[in-house]
Image (cartoon, rainbow, N blue to C red; front, side, top):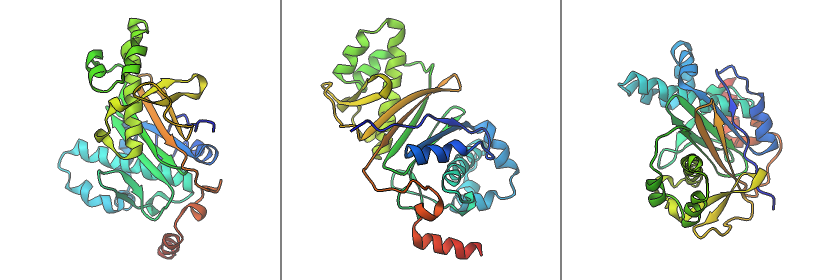
Length: 273
């Protein structure tokens, strides 16, 4: 099968959008990724009169967080998730209810087919959505100062180490950092976090189709049901995405009427009336 395509990340600098590309990517590719900055979304956290309504069950956690910076960033990330999902589903963001699985992975309560992933570093935050299977996103500063020998010892497979050794010296650390973000994204998609042994799997560039998953010895590990991509964003970050096609039968329409659990939709309509 052809390798799954991960959508290119879209920059959304404010809650008002632009959002059109999110629905288009979710409909056309089955996944969508949005990125922005804390500072761009902070004014919305500080000025919206609907913050309590938008945060929903997260309001108590927001209020209990003593550090103002941590509190505002927490709120901004939750608003980003809700506005992104709302744009894809055609529903007001305050109608969406975030809940958390073991390990803290967010999901949309009442939806049976939307997967979420959140990542942040520095001023950047990113959200991935998928309607076809698991998704994971990871962001890292592109200029992060890392020791190549440490990455080789702790996260790179022998095949990756050999590939890096064949690169010009100036390209080795940037490529190793890219591999690291891909591994983080894949681990997040699986819900494993740091529990997944990063030396047990690797990646190799495959032309225009992006990276492909390989076993530790360099042999192919999938038949195309996973897709992987890395993009530079805002000139100073790397954003990697891992997206999976579980072979689910999904409608092209991603509006709330087709994607939302029927029982939850009925309850939501009653509360809105």
